[in-house]
Image 1 (cartoon, rainbow, N blue to C red):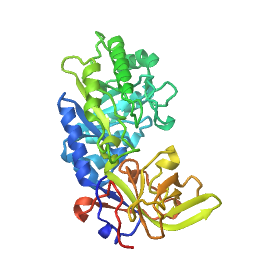
Image 2: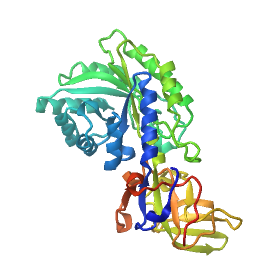
Image 3: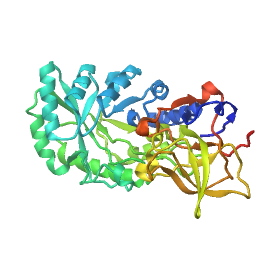
Image 4: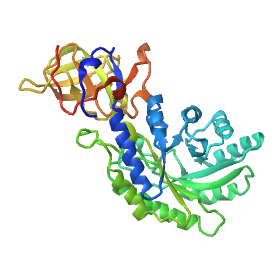
Length: 399
């Protein structure tokens, strides 16, 4: 995020989420333009951020919706996404969620097991519907990211193993209310080594040639999932992910058959750097050899550092860096030792009441927030309605 006049923000009750709408639009525009070069179809992963305003912006750029729950399907449709562009994924779809998707006549289900296909068929038959399905296949490609968000290796709960494909394909032929339409893959999230996607293409090429040639199963599309990472280390220099290189890899490496579409499911890369969590310093505290900066935001507003040991740039936007800088452990008020945003963070000498921005919180921030400790859900504000932006360098403001 870039630029911020803190005058108006200081009037808002902290903590809150702040979205740079201009950067969001630039990011969406960049992704749209690069995907369009090759006719690629992009679905936005609602799990990254389901804020109503954010969904409105994403929808305006013509993206589809990637959902992992029935409520996400309902939210996507209510936000204007055409059901014909909505997919429902997830390893544990409930009967109610399957019914919701069938009632909305979504584009397809990304199916992850033989039993799931059988259940979808049974429910579709009872409703007089036909379900379009894509098989989510586990390609055993290591995304080399945090183990909680690596989803494409053999020990993962996600997807159908290659060794089970023959049995699954034989069963599909027996299911009258299920129509096979495509293949789905997703190997993980926050992938910054683009070579991972080249390996994914190689695995997809192998699977399609081995199992989907001349046997009556013709995938209308290949859904390669998402996973493109963002630069959490330096979001100011690299606010927009490398969409050109990302899509070019699939253009060059994926063996696409005539008439076969290629779909993507991007979430984090579209929204992460456009959001920040704005907090206020409650207390400064010295304990033995540690300096603590205690904020009014905690893991209830941004759980990624506690859950994934994730790094976010932290900035005191009320002060400039100087010779009197200190290193702080930046922590929240939640009664958990894991409620820590970062340790040994160099910041200006800080005081009670200073505003602090935790950057790149536009993905998996607001959407994963909770009311643990009976905390109050916090509000969201937007740059185009407040006339403000978050800075790339700290500003001096009145104290």
